[in-house]
Length: 372
Image (tube, rainbow, N blue to C red):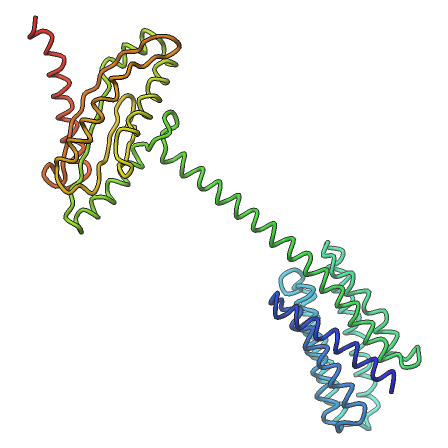
């Protein structure tokens, strides 16, 4: 009675512990293990005189089926060792068929011997699958193989009350295997999360490289036109206006020729920062290429707002730009366009602003001659 109580108590504790793991972690192997332990408990109760031969057969088959499910899930044979997986399915199918036949024809000595041989073959195949997975580097499989030592000793009667102690020891060792499996899965999960984080960071960096001007850090042409298209769609729905400033630096080539490209690059960086600070926070500033910049002023209630933005931009060169102690002097020409007055597509609006910018540049170049 004490041994029986110990048997059921240990199995119940292991089953409840594994049930907690199965519910919290949602691990299929733990769920199968709970089923296997539960089947062993029910089978033990039936053998203790709480059921007839049919219940003995049913609970015995249930224990075989749940242990098969646990073995395949725990050792991952379906994906990692498909040949062993097929062998396991065949072996346990033979066991179930043999047990049914043995109970149906209890007087048949041949069936009894056949069922015994089938169990031996199933044990050999199961241990073989465990050894194969352990040799492949799957560490929890070591516990699986080790668990068969007390199970084999107990089932074949090499010790008194060996079957009960063998089952307890087997389940205890398998529970250690489950814990080891949880540790490995948790490590793999953390590794996968870290890899996902690195991938997301790389994607962000690649997107930044694809949409940012590498010299100035502001939007490039690609990002500018993508935002432009989005703002046009929004303006069509809301009826708001969109303003565009097309800016070209005057005499920038002279700066490069006189001071070198390094000074020219610093000039572009300083100009970009000032331009960004001169517009509204919601406006988009972009370098379209070379010394050409653009401002996208979105959500305008009237065209006068764009004029205010333009005035702010015109004053950003009032403060002299000094690079390496040298006073670098440039001017700028600005062209404007308003959606939908000057066009309803991004290309048309940029073309209109670009054309007005060149008119302004040409007028500025001709002004000194006219004054002379």
